[in-house]
Image 1 (cartoon, one colour):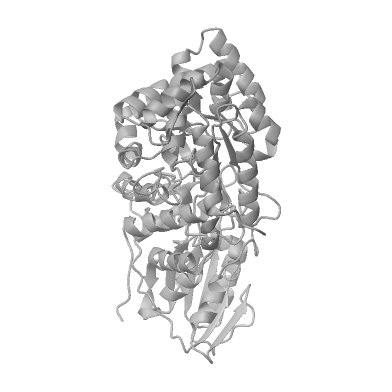
Image 2 (tube, one colour):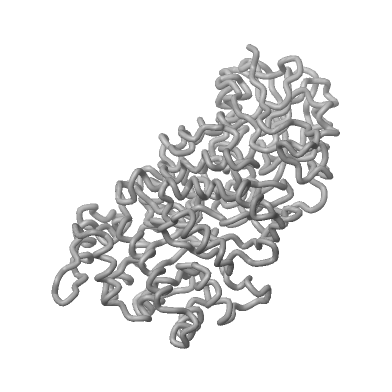
Length: 602
């Protein structure tokens, strides 16, 4: 497939920028951002401003829709990809949408958003990094910043210019299905890992491979009662500020370009309609100058009934939301918001403020000068350099929790038996938000499974035997590794209100290994701590691998001692599910405390 010449991309972009005229005077790219925004706003009709405030799902629009309705943004929801799902197809798709936007009178480019939450995870064969809970275990903001930079390069090559990341939630109840999207249970850890914002955006938004970052979900989504996804945060304002606000403050200080509002409520009031949280605290107190975006159909939850209403539209906009993600009913949203403005229920001042924020970020990103995919970065998608970075991150994320009689590190020249449903499954080890929204088991994308990594790291001539369910092992093996844990899930599907232990298949696999009499090391692939206290005395070793992504050799590096384990628990590990929620300093006795992690003595 022929790649667009990068110099051609730049020429087209400059032409688009210089085409914006006021009274015949060009709005040149070298003029101050505020001046360029003022001139644009002076030319824009109400319909153009409403279009800029609308974000539609790419499958719900045509090129003609983009031009006719002056749409300001598109997104790919989880799993929404072109066919074939290749980097080149992504670039072709986004460029086509962009050409439609540039056919509008003011030639305002689109900003295209994706959930690149652990790498460019919608794209087949992109580098999939560990989910945030594993990155929190590394305690390494510099490493996390580098992951943001690598992700930005892969995103840039394929066309999008906005990622709905990082998730800066502070997960306080491991029953919550989005626990793995959290860097950890304490605000200082999530605040430190806000370094990924600088990785995504660069030191300035207009730099090479700079994409807009999104601090989400504002605010308190990790603190809902019972760990209920999209539930209610029943905390005092002092507690909300102490636990859940600091990571957003850190992101704002780093110049994060956008903030996404949480589906959750605070004391019964949905955050999407909470003017005090959005306007008074975020925009005024924290001095956030970027754009506030809703979550997927988030405004529809304000009154608790299906189907958004005029009241929900005006409530959300007046509360301070600047761009509304209305994936499919975007036309009705535009019509409804227009009626609310014309009736005086949403002031033009609010509409202009929203547009000022949106246009400012588009200009600062350089979209008017460079609206198309920078295909010089296509070669970075799934590159060896990025995969090496991911492997290093995986190794740094491993937390050694038990190591009786120094069963680890394993001898590279030993006879080893490997079992478990997560040993040879790239989909399981990558988790949710991988290629599709919920993720899936199996060979969903290219990568190195943990079993592959073990085989590649073991010495030549050594024996590595694999059986998924553990059958076939005997006492001749020096050790057995059981790679077990969770299967992929994401929001909605991930909450665990009941049991939180291993399933019967995993327990059966481990028991078959134990029956052979050889030492057993359990490697847990999971998005949260699991209820394993009753089983732990039977195991010789335990490693928390979290959701490592596509580079399973990083797990093997630690198992064999190529890398020493340095990971520390980003969350408190429960003795039983009945302890949930359990967090540092709450007076409960955990199985392993926050910050726990062993290393090798040899």
